[in-house]
Length: 321
Length: 264
Image 1 (cartoon, each protein chain N blue to C red):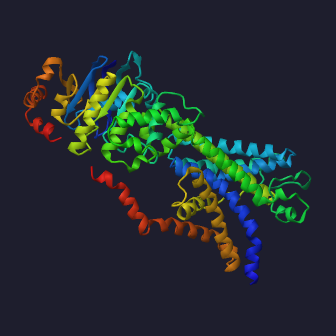
Image 2 (cartoon, one colour):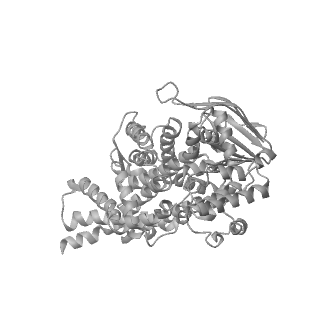
C-alpha cells in the first residue's frame, strides 16, 4: 500500500520527465524515422542544451533567451555531424559518435565559461533562478506559492503541443516534403532535383536543436546541468519512438499523431521505470540495465508473429514482377 | 538537345577489377529525337545513362544539354533538365509517401523548395486529371501510399513524374525490364504517347530488340564502351531483328557475341 502511494506521488514528476524526454525523442524521430539516419550526436547535444541554458541563466540572462540559445547551440552540433557525414563522407553513426565525443569537452568548456576552467556540474545561483519548469514547482504551483499555470506537466504539454504543431506545418511545406523524400528514397529525391546532402544537414540541425531544447528544460527542471546528463539519451529516445509505435502505431496514422505517439512513448517509458523502481523496489543502480532491457523487449515485440507477416505481404507486389 | 562529346569512364582504375565502361562515346540528339539504345551486359548502356544524369562524374569528355555544359553539375542540379525512369520500380518513387505527394515533389523539380505548402488544391485537380490519362484508376487513390502500388503502376507513375514538368531530356533505363510482358507493353505505350504528345527528346535503353526497332526514330547499339551501330530514319524503319544481329556481329567482329546479346 505504501509503495502504491509512493508510486502515485511520483506520477506528476514522471509525467514531467516523460514530456521533457519526449521532446528529445521527437528530435530523434526526425533523424531516425524521417531521414533514416542513426544519429548518435544526441547524447552530447542534450547536455550542450542544458549547459548553454544554465550558463546563460547563471549569468543573469532571461530564461527564454537561454532556451533559444540552447536550441541554436544544438543546431550547431547537428551541423557538425552533418558536415562530417555529407561533406567528409563519414558514415552517419560514426560522424555522430565523433561529434558526441568532442562535445564532452565542449560542454565542460561551456559550463566553465564564467570561471575560465573546465566544469562538470553547474547549478543556477538562487538569485538568478527563474526556470520555466522546475521539480520544485510540482508542489509550489499547487499550494499557491506559484501560479497554477506554472505546474510543470501543464507547461510541458503546451511546449510539446507547440513543437508538434510547428513540425507538422514544416513537414507539409515544399522544403519539409523534400526532407521526407530524402529519407524515403534518396535516388528518387536526387532525380527530382532535391539536394539530399543539404536536406540531411537541415534535418540533423533541426533534430539536435530540439534535443538541446529538451536538454535545457531538463537542466532547468533539475536546477543544474551535469556533464553526464545526456548519457544514454539515444536509448531513451529510441525507447520512446519504439514504444510509441508499438502501442499507438495502428491507431495513429497522421504525422502529428505519430509525433504525439513519440511523446506518449517517452511517458510510458518513465512510467515503467518508475513502477519497477517503486513498486518492485529495485535498486536504482540497476537502472541502465533495465533501460537497455526495456528497449530490447520493445524492439523485439514487433518482429514476433503478426508484424513480420504484414511486412511480407507488403513486399509481395515486388516479388511478383 | 543533348550533346555528348567523347566521354570516357573507367571504374576501379588501376586495380585488377578495372572496367573501362565508356571508351570515347560521342552522341548528338536533335530536339524531339527518340533514340533507343541496345547492347549486351557490360556494353556501357547504363554507364552512359548515369553519366548523363550525373549519378557519377565522367573521367573525360563533355556533356551539354540544350547548350548548357552540365559535365560538372551535381546530379540534383542536372535534374532540372532531365526526367528519369529507372529499371527498378522501387527507385523512382518514394514508397512511404502518398501518390499526390510524389507528384508534388516532381512538379517542383529544379525549383527552389520554399516554406510554402507542399501541395496546393489547384495542383491536386491537375494531378487527378493527369493520373486519369494513365488509365490505371490511380486518380481515385491520390492519398494512397505509393508502396501499395504494383511495379507497373509505379513505373507509370514515375513516367508521369518525369514528364510532369516538360524535361529537356527524358532518360529511360530499361524501365520495363522488371515488368511482366503485358504490363511492359502498356507502360511502353504510355511512354510513346507522352513522348509524342510533348515532343520529348528521349534516350531509352532496352534489352528487347523488337522494342528497340518499333519505338523511336533512331537506334544505337553499344559494345565494349563504344557506339558500334547507329541507324536512323527510313533505314531504321525497315530494320529487322536478323539484320540487327548481323550488323552487330560485323561491328564487334565476332559471332559469339550474338549469343551474348540475345541472352542478356
